Image 1 (cartoon, rainbow, N blue to C red):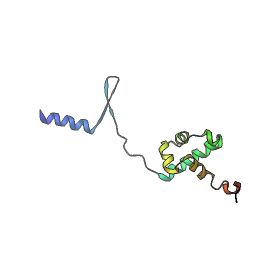
Image 2: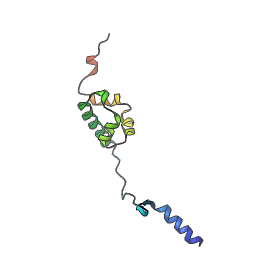
Image 3: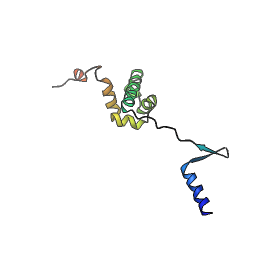
Image 4: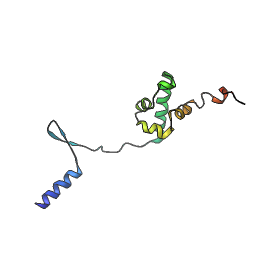
Length: 105
């Protein structure tokens, strides 16, 4: 009996089981892990942010909306760019030079 109990517990720990409408349903792991592409992720975030900031004002755009458009978690937006302000500054590079619009001594 010890052997069969151990075998069952090992089998259960090696597979994921769920209950769906009273029936056991085996949840499959994906065959391969999604590829991590930092440059691609960063580019998708920038493109999504550009579109959002073109459609609405800075105050009306949220980081979560940008993340959803880029199909990433909002934490990744902050990881790559820090804040919404820094993301906006990154998009604005090359478009205009903010120093040209600032008065000072």
